[in-house]
Length: 285
Image (cartoon, rainbow, N blue to C red; front, side):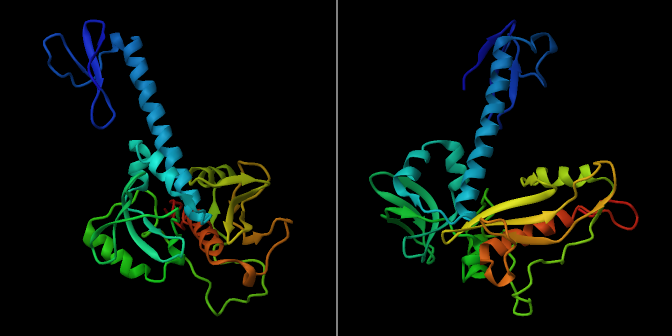
């Protein structure tokens, strides 16, 4: 973006998205002078920065939803949004699979005419055509550790946590007939509002005294829930049990919880628990 006049100065956005200013002699200043803080050009640029940040955050949330819900994405849709730098930065280097569920490679380019540009599992750059693609949840990737190692070799950096996302698998020692998991119960918070604030800051919805996360898996919906509390927000509280609920609101037996719902529910419960107070009164994480 070029320079715009603002009083006796000129302002612009630098490569990092920060508003910068230079004087009439062209010298770059350390900060924007306070006397032009309310200039329409400065206000407009700052509003543009806020919009771009919000847009990138929305792109990130949408792609993460595609992954968590295992939603197929039509290739023409990817080709359309790829033109947007915000979408491209979020989608680039994600592991994608074809319609058969087999890993196709790391996404590097999308073009309406030539198809998907990928780095395949042999390290070769290839072009493939597909009507739709999926961004698989890492718990569904059988060779996850190998893919992680390969990603490090390639220097892959994913904005959406996929390959290096914490994953949880239900062990064989679980009682499949039970309806709650108590692994992360008892995390103490000085005030309920602190626990609720942690849940919302992590991107989870809070409803009815619970942190909730809906997951759509193989066409079946489930909602992971962690009890937070529903009384005075200034009283101390401890994290409650984790459970999963079907569309009818009833708690599901653990044996009926799918791998993605299980992993994401455990991830939510662990993240909430990690913010608990320690014995010395400090926050754990």
